[in-house]
Amino acid sequence: MNIQEHMKLDMTKNLAVLLMDDHIDLTMEQALSIVLNSDTYQRMQNEKTHLIYQSPRYVYAFLANELKKGRME
Image (cartoon, rainbow, N blue to C red; front, side, top):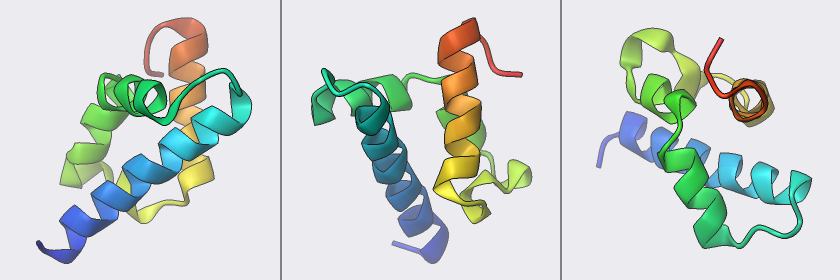
């Protein structure tokens, strides 16, 4: 596993934890499912967006906005 793959996995875990912090009724499995099925996650997988190099809270802001509005902006 290269460093970028490790960073993607770490970011995914952090996003799920932040999501659980905001929605205390979510389990880890539910939070991971939400993250993995999001446009934010898809964009995070694209190296050109450089999202994996940002802080988890910065990326989470995109995810939270996507969940609120139903789309990535």
